[in-house]
Length: 465
Image (cartoon, rainbow, N blue to C red; front, side):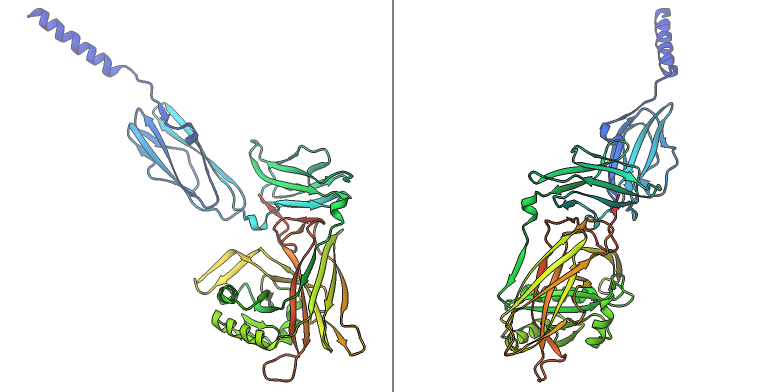
């Protein structure tokens, strides 16, 4: 009996020792990658799985842009769900949260990249063989370094004020083949925030121009629009649908932003007066008829009518290039009839990011992509008029130059010229205006000469990081 008593006492003593011995608290994260969570600007949800030996909690203060399925829990296997809201600025944000379990802790770094839009960021810079120094403005984050591996292409940060800075890029003259380099903008931890491709052509490549010729007729749909107009998006959708459905020929589009629109241009007032426009959106088809707030079927009907009425047309041949910040264009008009004409040459831009009110969805898009935006007229706004008589030649050559109001030589591959040949309207009820569009053609600005990325040439030349 005494032996049994001693044996039980031993068991109780051992049990007591086990209960009172200090255990080392710990937090073991299943996946080491979970200790640094990275989110893009749209936010989202990610999970962290960990084993805790005791009750745990999140004790580190954090901003409201991060939420969790729970801020505390019990021992064992736990799943922490981390949710990050969307970000509306270009600034990257970070926070470190700490999970505490007794005397153990684990830090989790959460990074969210700032909002960027590839349609307004530089991605490529093309320079001619002569070499140049260009300056690019960077906004939203100046805590980066700029690196390149090519000796002929050097870059450095200048004028850094903490929120904006400028990137100076110097390219030496090229007397050999076409060459390329990359500029990397890196964070202090070495992460690549942005890469820029720099291409410099050879002397032989620089001599090549792009020539556009048209032997067929194209219609022109010019629309008076505004970023504040709730029906602008509906007209855009109607036109896109009509162009996709119409099988009778080509049709080009120009969007003319009226007063108070974010993308207003100075030519708008004169065009609005000429076409007697007093509302938006209003389309002017071939300079002959007004289409207000129309759907695609009405546009198609008037396009079909134009096709049947406007059977004769002149041919347009054009070339354009950009050199030393100046657009140079040559327009040749052939097969002209005896009549009065006017030639318009407009600078158009695609992929312009700006706000837009959308009445269909009852919302405002802050980064709506606007295309076919009229920026500038190289000719007179209503066209340079001329007369073809029986004695004069049936062809004409026009030359234009325009010194671009641009902050650098990084001019854009998404800009182009549109040549619009107008002809005197005949006296019948099908034509509302003095001139109608005889033909029109898009002329790309030669991308061999100092062209760049996909940003707005007047108001959006920045790189946002």
